[in-house]
Image (cartoon, rainbow, N blue to C red; front, side, top):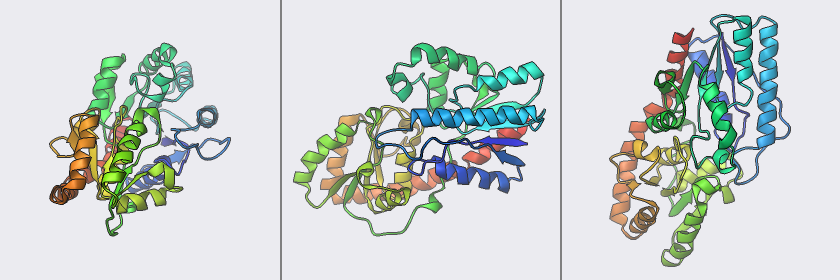
Length: 339
């Protein structure tokens, strides 16, 4: 039995899609599974926030309570696998306590998105490293398999925390472009597709937007969070845009820029973090934040260069599409070996 432990469904993030994609793939692969959902205090998140810190902890706490109830009822047994969509899960050590105390040989696996090993992550910015580092190292002593999206994230984790390299499996993360890519007419739009948190540096987009709006009056410069009230509206904008820009200082995969790529935008990104891996050997990868701005300027002023970049978008999107669509299958292969 696979016990599927999802993130709370937030339509403006990827979790609502995951809560459709993962069960679909489990069924496709003939996996016997049950999903353990939590309870919510409220729905939605404020603009600029990754999640609601109170609601997400309440949600996780109620999931843990249900998992303990299932163990008590003998519904989780030897050989079962508990799969977390997000392994940064306060209280997950309860399961090791119970597993070790009762001698039940179930497995604990899941996806790591980020943690205090990344100095630009929300947790680090809030000063949680001073205590969370020890908790993270404790978790890594008993978690059976850790799925990460990129080699970049694996190497970052290995360099900052006490974890066995054999525990970590690079799988990618799921994105299914066919669910949201639409053949619509492209418009002169440059987008900033990120949430408006400090690690995404929206102020740099604002800075060049104020200048470029004067020099390029035929172009629109849009922060998606300012105008998109739904995920479908977000995808509609990406499908119509020609250029997507990132200045991220924290990125272990880069879902927004991959979605932009799949929607036919030229993804202009700095040469750092996971971007160096995902956009290697492309014209989209720029030296630094200033080169990102300079290259956008060149794209706007040189229609031939823009056409060439748009052609490369199609080629590179095809290269990455299979990687994203295989992510859940990659995890399933490892989960089967854990049993």
